Image (cartoon, rainbow, N blue to C red; front, side, top):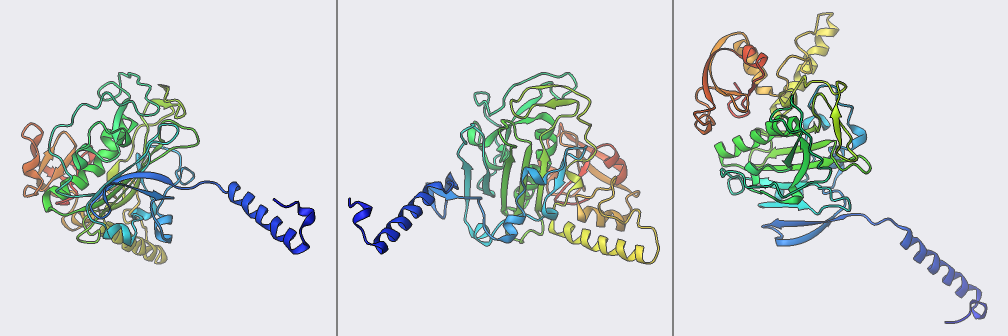
Length: 378
């Protein structure tokens, strides 16, 4: 290599610029992660590189970050981006696929993404998953927690939707309430819809961790029914990974009894879960604004007011037309606390041990903790 002192001035300038460019390239941070996928449009077991799993302004605005999430105050599930998911046109054009992110350097799961359909849903009993210990798995027993144990091995994409069992890329440390109350509501919306129609749903679940946390603060869940462009199923929500009465150290997974974590005051039914509901909310908001302009009271008209079943737009329309206090016949699923119309297509899928008939008002059922079926929208 020549000594720079023997080079001409233009050559020395060129050499300096080349060195500067090389140094700058080493200083750039590495982005993207490797995601193992099984995709009918990309080939089984191929690998792709993605920075954030999506593209486009709409997709970016629909992605939640820890900074976007308010502290938990009793609402177990909240809307993100007004309930509208961030799927791109490329996402919606894909064939059957299911992908799970590789574990990161802390052993934490990343985004799980799939096109749920009749070819992915499973009616089989879930297999043994006890050998998997997700990041932050420090199990504790509390007498007031359902089933006693604080943590569940929580599937990002539920077993009923994908048939996955002990896949460490699909299991996170989640509280009993988070798993069996929060996530389950949306999982059953999707599962019931696919089983009853044979259609497909784009479905993505992203765990959100803060800094060096080993336990996720919660998950972002996005879904959109494919064949009808989201008319039946469409949501973008965050589900808090909390347990009422328990404080959690999300960095380590340790926990202790604490009254500072309040009881759940609203569940999945308080979120926007269909495109029709989103339109109903907008229409209701316009009506409220008009009433205020006329000096009339807006109480009872605001789609976000507490105490209403704000998560099911069609249910609200049905309730307003029939009267939420009018007595009707319903079918109850006492296990998942859902109520259905007598002719609901999901009715035959309810086991006899969990099925009950009920005659009464919609308000009575909601007051008892039941939520309306996402298919028949009672």
